[in-house]
Every structure is written in structure tokens, then in C-alpha cells.
Amino acid sequence: MLRINYLLSLHIIMKKTVAIIFFNIIFLCLSVKNTNHTYSWGFFGHKRINKMAVLTLPPVMVGFYKKHIDFVTEHAVDPDKRRHANQYEAPRHYIDLDHYGKNPFDTVPKYWNDAVKKFTEDTLNAYGIVPWWIDVMSYKLTNAFKKMDVGLILHYSADIGHYIGDAHVPLHTTENYNGQLTGQKGIHGFWESRLPELYADDYDYFTGRAKYIEKPIDEAWNAVKASFLAKDSVLSFEAELNTKFPGDKKYAYENRGNVTVKVYSEEYSKAYDKMLNGMVERRMRLSIIMVGSIWYTAWVNAGQPNLDKIETKQISDSLKKALDEQEYLWKNGTPKEVKGHDD
Image 1 (spheres, rainbow, N blue to C red):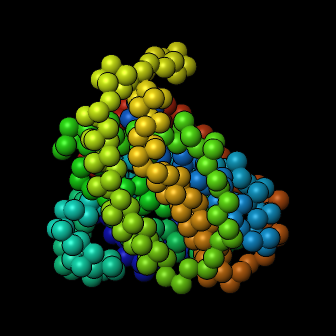
Image 2 (cartoon, helix red, strand yellow):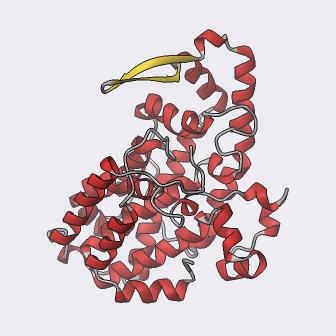
Image 3 (cartoon, one colour):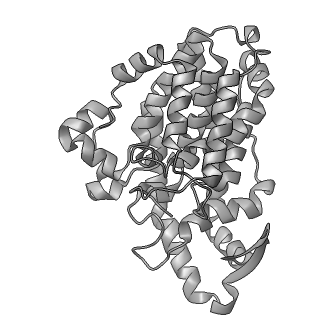
């Protein structure tokens, strides 16, 4: 069983080489292929979040990240490409807080070891671990900065951006993650993928400068708490709209490459977006500033290393090869059935 206590994570980081880490990525993806599943924020949304987060960084960091902005943007979706490969990846993307009762924030301990003692590790993994995993990833990124390892810095930066984005999605905090319990199946992709695809170009991405976060675990819990408090609106507004909107105008068909797909119509989407009153944009903006702030925090905690020294360094050939293989396997493998928020 995978363990994610902090000391073990740090030990692994210091001992593993780039080749070993990315061999594991390949191993985890042996059975993955590109399916029609919808993922948190959609591939479009996750890439936009990581790209905009680069622009929040201070001058001492922004040169390095701008040099590699294409990497952290394109690889923002790597965790979703891995999540159907093994049982450990999916829980890192969500936390079903309503499983723990009406007042989960009074019930679930903030720190991992305390939560394990109270609920067991199996239970926590069964209902999601995203706030704790963000904390673990912040330690991993810190150690990558200490080692001045370009590949690991970029890999962990891209990954942590994904998990932070997930924590800001209301439907990632509930067992009713796709409206399957309320007759609203499909709302997952509607809120976090369809709406951003339609309206994200009009969003305001000026979020201010990244700030140092004293305790990343606190920030992670703040994110999921705000998401949890918004989930009822996400569900109830769509349910209300569905009762008022003409059924024959709710859906439309669009061409995606060589495939015609059924989507929520632009008219229905516009009406839902209006009811949400900017919620999707706000959650995306909060994701962006938190991603930048965690990157900045990890750099500060690493001793503020001079990134100019590695700005022009290239990612190793072994890492490039591993990521190319991961992409091939994602497109051509066979997905495994993995429990989790499977949309």
C-alpha cells in the first residue's frame, strides 16, 4: 500500500534518480489510452491555469519558468493521463468530504498522520486525499529546487498545478461528483470543461503576484473547503435550469476532429453560467494564484537558489524519452478499471 507520510516522501525524493522516477511513470501508464472521459477543468482548463500561474511569479523566478512555459503548460494534464493506470493516482484528485458527515471540517483531521489514526489509510484513499497530496507535492518540489534538477522542478511544478486546480473544483469534494445521485449525470464536464472552453477567453487572469504560504496544508484545506461550500449551488442551479429550459434546446452537436459529439448547447451553457455569476472564473483565478504561490513557496523553502544558473539547461534526454513514451501509451494503451471519480 502506498504510503504518503512526509518523511518517507522526502527520503524517496533524495534517493530516486530522474530515470527511475520516469520509468515509474511509464510503468503506471502501460495500460492507458486516450478515452472520451472528461477530466477536472478539462485539458484546456488545466493548461490555462499552469500557463497563467507563470505570470504570477517574481522576477527572480519568472525567467526560468517562461523559458519552460510550454512544458508546465502541456504537462499540466499528465496526472489525468496517469489516473486510469493504477489505484493510487485517482484519489489524489479529489476528496469526498460529504462521506464524513454534515460537518466534515470538524471531523476530518487536517494532518495526514492524525487522519490515518482516526480513519485508516485505506478509508482515506477510498474517498480521496487531494489536500494532503498537495502538501506532499510541495515538499517534493522544494527538494527538486534544492537539487537544482531542471527535470524534477518542471515535472513537480506541472503536477502540483494539476492537483491544486482539482482542489478548486466543487464537484471534486462530493460523492455526487457527476450528478449521478441527483439525475444530473454529465454536470461534471459541464461545469469544469464546457463552460471554460466557451468563456475562458473572456476571463480576467490578473491575479496579482504570488505570495509565500506559511503552511501549504492550510491553503490546500482552504481550497477544498471553499469548493465544498459551493457544490450545492453547482448542483441546485443546474437542476433549477433544467426544469425551466426547453428540453429540445438543452443539447447540441459539435464536430471535434472527425467525431461528432453531443454537448450542452451554447444557449443552455450561457444560462447556467449566468446563474453561477462568475463562479467558474473565480475558482480558476484562485487556482492560478495558488499554483504560483506554491511554486514560489517551494523555491523560498529551498533557500531561494539562483535559477539563472539552470535557466538554459535542457531537460535530460531520458526524461524526454520517458514522456514521449508516456504520451504514446496514453493514446494507444488499454485503460484499466480504477475506482475513483470516473466521469
